[in-house]
Amino acid sequence: MTLERTQLIEAELDTLYLISQVLNSTHDLHAKLHTVLEILHKRSGMCSGMITLKEIENNSLIVSAVHSNSNDTHSALVRYNPGEGLMGAILDAGTTIVVEKISEEPRFLGRLGLYHPELPFIGSPIYVEEGDTIGVLAAQPSNNHFLSERARFMEMIANLIAQSVKMLRVIERKQKHLVTERDQLKQALIKNYSFENIIGHSAPMLKVFDLIRQVAKWNTTVLIRGESGTGKEVVANAIHFNSGCASGPFLKLNCAALPDTLLESELFGHEKGAFSGALNQRKGRFELADNGTLFLDEIGEISASFQAKLLRVLQEGEFERVGGSQTLKVNVRIIAATNRNLEEEVTEGKFREDLYYRLNIMPINMPPLRDRTEDIPELSEFLLRRISDQQGGRPLDIKESAIRILMKHDWPGNVRELSNRLERAAIMSPNGIIDRDVMVNTGLEDVVAQASLTSKAPKSIAIDFSDENMDDRERVIAALEQSGWVQAKAARLLNMTPRQIAYRIMTLDITMKQI
Image (cartoon, rainbow, N blue to C red; front, side, top):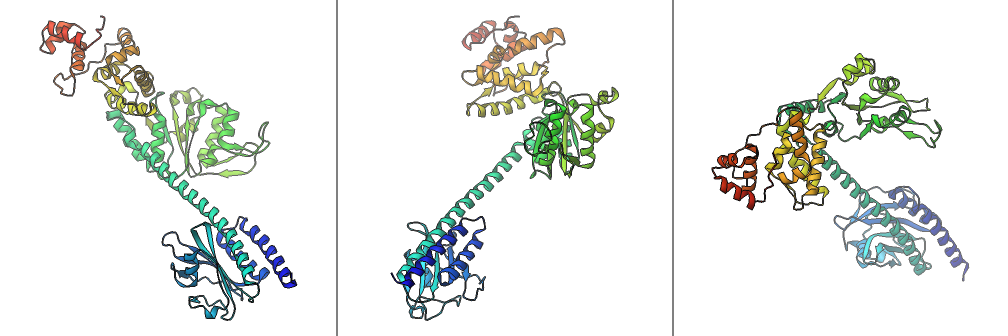
């Protein structure tokens, strides 16, 4: 082996090592490719390097990196269409092309003005797998010695570049997929928490809708008040996702679930070593919700000592992490919720008056379900669709006779109790049809009857017996309910004889209520 060949092999090995380090670095692809061409020029005598990569949209080659003998960087956009010039020929053939004297090559276009006409030229395809060429690596040796060895060396470099480009494109595809998925999820959230998903057309709910639309426009603090189970969190979701900060984070915290020490760390975060077990610095909910919304549920449960700490961040937007001295400033929209009578708490000295006024800027009072019983049919349909999804898309249908029982209940647990009752009924219905008999089996009718004995008479519900959407079974049950389960009276309501209605009760398998 001649000394010249030995020196060439050593230079190529050194070049391969350096290029592999560059391509494995964290720099962006454009910077990597320029560095690769610079190393080729300085370490292995491969001058006027050029890398072209194929555009995904139209398969043409775009010059992505150039390094000339004068170290100038060419930034002009140059494109080679498939089959055009020497670069297009290499792309089409998918094999390395060696030209001993570039001035004698008719396919050479010389668009960049880089190459010496009397020197050779080597171009190697960059492909991620056989038949999938994504670009071309080209350079000009300083002489025509050992051209076949230099061609193999260029193929090695092209293979290293291909692996780097392939990995980058996989990452880019994943990022695009994640961005698309994020946007789809965001749209789904906005759709799920739109005003249409707060069910109800009663007068109290129409007032709530009007208030939500008003407060969603502004970044003001909102206090949602109402009994447990009335849907305070649903309203908080609707306010955030229909507001100007909908693109920001939305964080939630139940203030009643944590003692003061944990609540402070949870809201404000803590520094490493702030207390036993604080092994790392941790951001709190206020910091994480910056430029978004923080929903503080059960705000009336926090202690008097913590109320002072919360008041400061609500007024100034400033706080320190537990164990820290750095003051952090955030821009967070606060939505709070409570089922307590805060006015009484203030009078009794249990709740700070200044914090009360800071929270009660825009109150929204959620009506209990007993005050909007006309919403129960629509609510029941909505909740059953959700239960159906939870049960794998199982078809569920609720009959008027079941709705009438639901509307006679006072619902101390509000919408949450209604949802639980309907889920129980769905489980107990083998065919997915929830009628009076199914509701009776859940025990709800007994609850309604007991309530009517201890408090007031059941609510009377107008029934249209001529309704064409009501099947025979539902019509007979409705008449029996209207008549207090006296068959003779029910028969008169339906223009039947007592014999006819007794026959219908038997053939329709109606379980008579024992009075």
